[in-house]
Length: 196
Image (tube, rainbow, N blue to C red; front, top):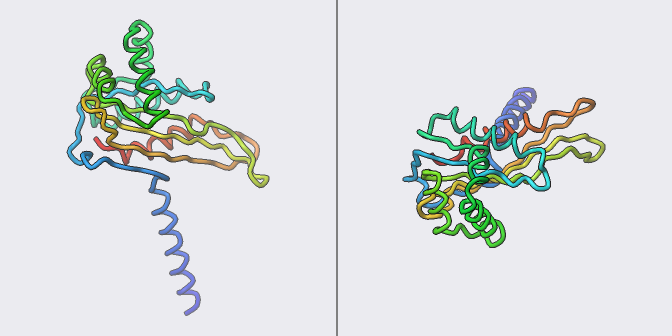
């Protein structure tokens, strides 16, 4: 009898762990998200400070993941927007002002959002921030950690339709895991929960 109870307990614990792994640390949907189905999405180039080495990897990978999903008729990646914005001073100013308001006062400016949508002919855009991108030691365990925050914004209204934060970490002994590989796994987990 005791062994069956032990087995049931172990199975129950295992199921709880599996269920917990599927959840994001934080995820919030706007009430309008149920009817939100953009056809064209852009990924604003990430501002990776102080994790500059992560910028190109994250910009490229998130665009590839969105393209692979086949949810959108068009995906404009962060690298493309970054290159085009260097020749478009107006967009550079609008993007910088929009992101500053979003980060400093948590306000998605509708007018600036509309301008971003108009310039790139997109219905929505994704804003990605890097929260962690490092190797550390905790209680003698070597850990590789990547953390991201993602927001999906409806371009025409500036409404933040989805806001999520999650992180992933991996312990290691000798060989450091590639942070870009961890980030790709993390992005796939997060994008699965994204409205589309």
